[in-house]
Length: 452
Picture 1 (tube, helix red, strand yellow):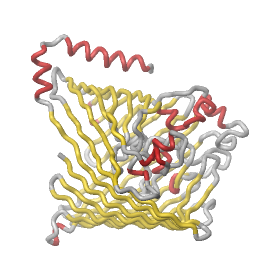
Picture 2: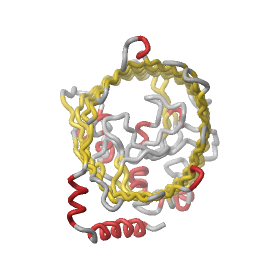
Picture 3: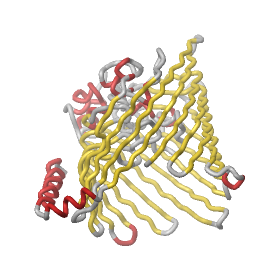
Picture 4: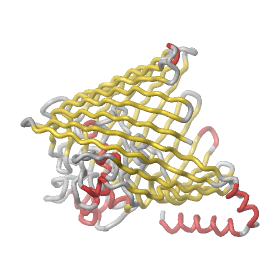
């Protein structure tokens, strides 16, 4: 699959559009719609390290997105989205995870350096789409949601990709899609960077033999009645092949009781030049090629206004390989994800071969969660979620425990959420597999969002 094929399709569609009457195009533009959101985000992070060393960082930022989508014209439409995050009232020690953290890392600095404290604006989306019968296509910059390349919308701004995607809907609930992605903009970045160089940073050529690369995801999915199955193969020549698969089963027992059960599996292997170069002595991974395997399961039960969830995940251990999951594009697929245990910062520039908590080779995770909608008790729009996880690995000195509490309110287009996060013995792994643990991490967030 060549990049030129997709670009030629895009060019052909633009040429076709010029063949129709200008009045039709003008009507499509006039009938377009404006949408977006305005978001306020406050974050406060407190860390206590060994030796009674502690630090507290916080930040305030306001921003959001403004989109314009044209009406359809001969099955064609276009969308552009302007994104911005603008900090204010910053302290001496700034938490840049809602501002420009990736900008600072990409410039070679620490996450909290001045470069990461500066607000930015970016044209996050600009794409042409086409849809007819059982076929649809888009090409350009776009926010997408897939298991291993994701928007990560829970932060201030979403991540986005540049490329193209085509999908065909077949009979019996089967969909087949293929994409070609060559650039990625992380949620705290003002720039689209080559998608493989974003993952590996200055080590890209050393690992892959080239300064750039692409990712070609191929997806097949099927849905019928209570069952849904999905499999995605993310192939990146001379870097890595990742296969994600899941199965979901949903059952409604009555108006008051329903449940869903799901299984997932992830397989990752380095390929081509990366497989050879990472296996060499002295490589960034300590002479280990990538071979990661993970499985997970979850059960969710909904009863009246309550929801109960339990999940288990296991990343298999293999001392002869780099066995941690590699997730550089904001994918956070495991069912045992927590707000702070989800490889959040391993999608920063050049950090792909590090890993966090549940994603470290050999880690077993258990999660329980309880959600409550307070509407039936006379508090319409209010809800609460409490969750806890335990992550254990024979490479950890101590088991990690995460506690999360979220109190939310939503009415029509407005929502606000208060989040509290308490973590003990937070674990992380560097590219060569070295494990470190942070004794205490506390974090508090206030997020207000208005959509229009």
